[in-house]
Each structure stands twice: as structure tokens, then as C-alpha cells.
Length: 403
Image 1: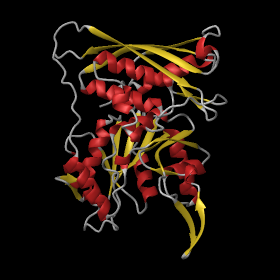
Image 2 (image 1 turned 135 degrees about the vertical axis):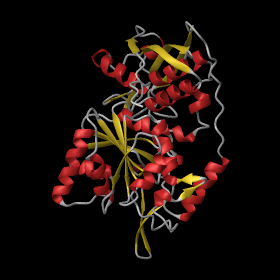
Image 3 (image 1 turned 90 degrees about the vertical axis):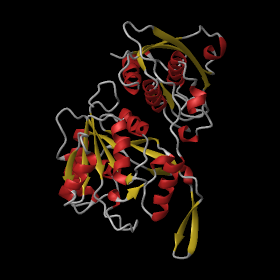
Image 4 (image 1 turned 60 degrees about the vertical axis):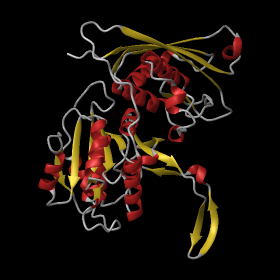
């Protein structure tokens, strides 16, 4: 399971499944309530293991450890009894972290349908001193109330609905939990606890499928999703023997600079540089790589998989696209050889952050080597006039040989 090509190769996932499920009123702890022909917990485990983390720790109600061992089967899971609060349950999981774990993702089992790509996106974005949460924009009109009186509107542009998994650098999270225990303070989620200890928290785009099953209505919604969903068809891999001929793809992308915001390019934030316009974060480097990879494998293009017909990717960072593209290729029987990408533009000044960008892009692709270069156009065309950025990427992929 500890595959160095995956974004979670040095990450642990702590699944919190110790809740009583009072509001669900299903006569059992929430994680053990049936969802289709299996339990909520079993569905949650599917999403976690599809993300291929280095370690999985499951926190369950005391006395249910043996029952959970039967559910997990031969999957490598450490099971521990939870405490009398969510915070104490997570602390019990932290005590079991293995050596070599750099990042910890804390996930609610009640978010049973969370896609594996969400785990990869969170893990990829974790940095020293920086935690990451998935979140969705708030779409409802919000009001501040006092009793029965509506006091004032609330600007929803400044709000987001937090989800899990929430990811953090290991040492900083362990220290934050120790501080909270010493102070005797309980927090509503791990991000709040981490921030209270001085950590910074950022967010990536969450998923509509990662909703929390809390009420009977939520449970019915999950059942309807499962009953109506059909696997997305993928081209079947063709078994080959001996040397495998590589396939090459080319991708291009162009984005204009926006009036404000912060530039996201080559998997990095560039403070002080204006953002690029786009359906997502405008990361033209990541987008060109996606098209090159999909084209090489004959699996369509970025618009087909991540365009406006997929609102769940609105505002998503390019590393989410890259991680999902690597999954799509693997499902179709392809491995990534390497990627070379060049962007044309007068800004940002790139050379000092080349290695950082290459590492970020490579990590998002599960470890595939990525080389990035930058050039100007000597003042010619829209890149030369500073109106935007143009990118070209070349990718090499090959079919996975069967022994």
C-alpha cells in the first residue's frame, strides 16, 4: 500500500468512527448503520484505501474493536477505542502513528462517499506549518438572527462549508493536540485546534459527495446516490508482453491575467502577482500537463473531465486535476513516464522557485518526474505585452505491461 508514486505515500489517515449517531436515530453507532448492502464505515474505508495512504488508523466506540476487525478483513488497519469526545478520539489515533509519517489526515467516517481524489488533493497541499481543509462555497442566502428577529444579512462570499479529510504536518498537529489537552479546551474541528496553536490553515475545493451523514434525510440521500451511480466507463488496458512502446501527448493552455487575486501557477501560490482567469484556479501549467497526459493516453481532454459541466471542480487547484488525471491514467492501464512543460510570459520571475514547482507538480502526479522551464517572447504577442501566460506541455506515458 505504501506506494511512493502516490500523494499519500508518507501520510496517515485517522478515520474517526466513534460517534454515537444520536441524530441519525438508527439504533446503532453511526458508522455501523447499513448503507445499501454494507455499513457506512465500509463505504468510508473504500474511499480511504483507494487513496492509498501509508497508514490507516480507525477509531471506534469502545467494545466494538472485534466487530470492526471482522469488517476490515485483511486490510491493514490499526483499530483503537475512542474517547468521550471527538478530540480525545483523534488523540487516541495520533498515539499510534508509525515512524516515517510526515502528514496526518483526519477523516470522519460519516462522510462515507468522499472521493479518493479529495484525500490526494488535501495531502498534496499540506506544507510545514500549514494545514489544509476541503471546503465548498456556501450557496444559501444567510441571515444573522436574534430569537425570532432577522438582524442582518451575512456575506456568504467570506464563508465556506468545511469537510474532511483535514490534513496537517504530523509534528505540528501532535504538538497542537498536546497543547489543547494541557489547556483543557475542546475545539469543533481539527483545523480550529491547529490554528489555535499558531498553525496556518488553507483550503482546497471539496466535493458535493463528501457530505456528512447526520440525519435520516442524509442517509436516504446517500442511498439514492449509491443506487443511481454507475461506474464511469474507462478504456480497458491491453495486456502486453516485453518492451512497451511509449506514447507522447502535447497540451497547451492560455489564460489572461485577472484584475486581482493571487496567482496560482505550476502548483504554487505567487503572492503579489495577479491571478489568472479561469473556471478553476487558472493554473495554466497544470492544465497543459493534464491535456498532454490525457492526449497521450487517448483519454479525451481537460474539458471532458474537468470543464464547466463538472461544477465540483470550480475553483479547484491544478494539483487536484493532476492527481485525478494520474488516477484516470492508472485506471486505464497507463503509467506516466515524464512530463516537460514550458510557459511563456514576462511574469512571475520563475528561476528561483523552479525546483519547488517541479516538486509540487511531481507530487501531484504521484511522483512522476516533471521538468518546468520559462521564457519570454521579447515583447511580442499577448505574453510579451503582459496580458497573460501561454503554456505548452509534452508528456510521455506507456501501457503497464502484464507479467
